[in-house]
Image (cartoon, rainbow, N blue to C red; front, top):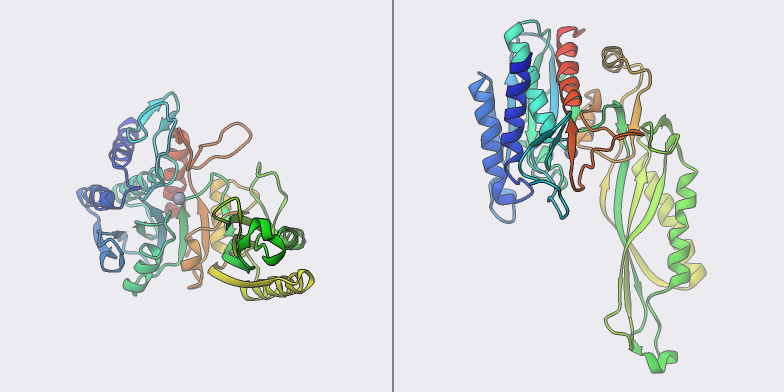
Length: 392
Ligand SMILES: [Zn+2]
């Protein structure tokens, strides 16, 4: 057992050592994953989105296959890119450091630890010959950057890629059967620029009453309750509709009344919500507010990412819940890459070594990110058990 743990940790250290928040380092990180997979006898296909990238830097997406000669295939979706380290770390963020039952380092929990746990599970399944399902591990390059050059590119290129079920191994120890949808957009208010001393001749585009009215759309969204529960310790019961103005830009100088104001927003959808209907409702609210405040404003949606969920009585969900001994399936308050394959009709669950409970928070995307070794081992063992007890 000890040597299996050591090989998983060594592989994780190698991954953490490369700062894959930087595009120029992505190919070095992909090479490590590839080397480890091939060393253990797995075939690796590479799908490089370099030609679509603006900087013409290699963006490799890997598909690592364990063919057990079975009818079904389980897909495991992970990513090797990370967010920048930021300031204030106690140790070098790009050196995996074991302290007690924790390993510190950028990506240890999100999502390099998961890459290591998945590959270790595949190694053990190959050695034991007990798997009742084939496994394909997808390791993509830009989950943190939006997915265009990662999972989206991969699915377009690898047309034959298909699976009976999918585990998005980029999540919590509390498994989630769905994720929220996300809409980004911007509101532009037009006024009339002018001298602050001659304010009566200008029209200030920073229209606070109008912006306040728009921000109050949060109260409308809040009324939309999902049938799915939010993760434990998240502080909310059911997942619900959210709306926030997250960026406001206007003005250049104290004595100039700004003629333009731009407010960007984030609107969160329930996993089961229809995004077009939700957008229509917001547009109506926006038009009403415009009229009420007599504002010259436009609304534009810049990104629409639908939510998704898998029914609790789906046999894959039932099987997974039994194996992990979870009584409750949750839906995420954030979005994840699982939606791309869920759209194809593949039952999807998101889980992984990230822990956010009343005692522990892995600080993903923050300083001193860490993962509990036992959570990496649990992730690995859940995959092994699921494959060994797979029901067609
Ligand atoms: Zn992630």
